[in-house]
Length: 140
Image (cartoon, rainbow, N blue to C red; front, side, top):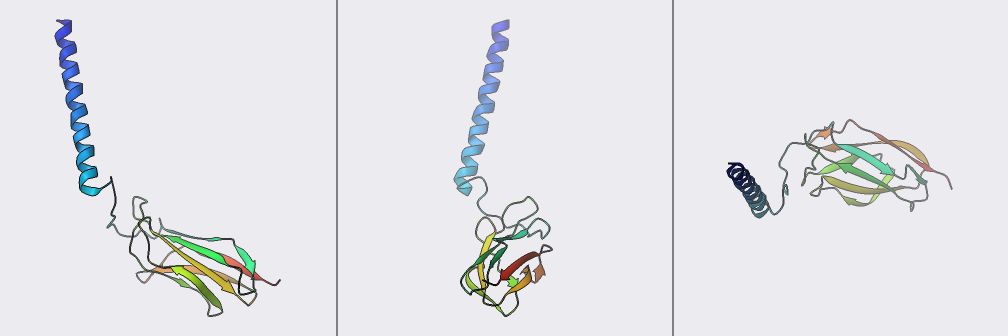
């Protein structure tokens, strides 16, 4: 009697394992991985903007990198979205990747020849991220 119970448990566990493996294989075969594309909407409150470093010399050469991550409601990156920065005309963007990659990331390198403190904001789809970053360009 005990051997029948063990046999039923083993059969049940084996079927559960096979079903789990089937679902994993099916998901990775169809999508190449569990979640490759994200067509969700951008949630501005989940997205963020940051700068590194926060200060640089105002020599027209020393750069500050601004990075924007566009995220959906689950915290996943939203790809293929155009981001623009709200900057004064005295700031020069030396390099930019303004279309978000698969992780939702865009990057901008900025320089200034004029000492100044600016508050940077980012915009996508005519919507402004609520976060602002203050960066400083200072005299040599």
